[in-house]
Length: 347
Image 1 (spheres, rainbow, N blue to C red):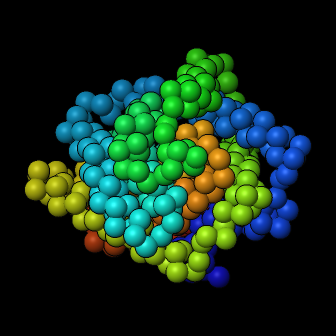
Image 2 (cartoon, rainbow, N blue to C red; image 1 turned 180 degrees about the horizontal axis):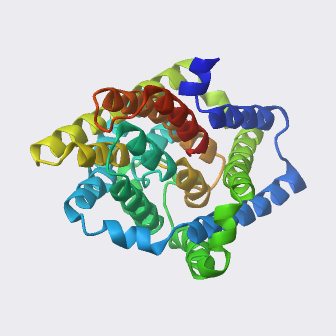
């Protein structure tokens, strides 16, 4: 049980239960329309609260470390997408096109916030820089990711037009209306409600996790009703796990090598590795439901959901190794507890 709590994200178990519920009781007809409205409201509320939580000073404070921020940004939005193009190009010969598209899509997403900061802290890294880097990545990603998707996907031919192969201007406007505008509104409202949100983490955590579960239920329900999941086999899932692992290993190796080659300190290296190697499920699943119309969404987000667990497991082990080497003098017992907390709070 200790091993499960330490290395398996409890939230992933909830996600799997949600997928099972969608398989047994998918939303149909009027229920599907109500689920769509609920998803729209929940996602907007999620990013409103995220905007209200994020202190602008935290962003500006870390921007002065431009070399570190630049390297993380290049890893997130250049190295990852280039690897995604290569991996998805290979994967399309072995898995359904929607899953190959999902492998590419996950590489275009911004970094996580909570787990990047948590694992950087566990390992004894530069936490302020990690806070800034992850926060800026998410903020920029709400605009940059849809634009990259719109530019790259039509060139790959991974998705047929009926499955959302062409990303329209309307879809990008939907991202702005459903994600970016609520985030900006949260920033504006932060002086009024930021303190209350900081003191009441329970309700905001419920919105965080509940909104993603709702989006997953709606997406997988649509896939079940249309029969899209009949195209997925156990072999496909094993291949997705393999491709996700290759992507993560390649980026961790590259960011570690670049950090050392460019002469960064060990704390900075830790921040670069953990912030530059992660992808956000909290941003990715809502974006996918807007950018890719139709039942294919449930297959497109599958590589992201698996990558989420892979990155938690690998980064938990890596953080403990950094800590054990004395990077930050972290007590192993405290590191164990922090790994569990990072898994519970990450998305």
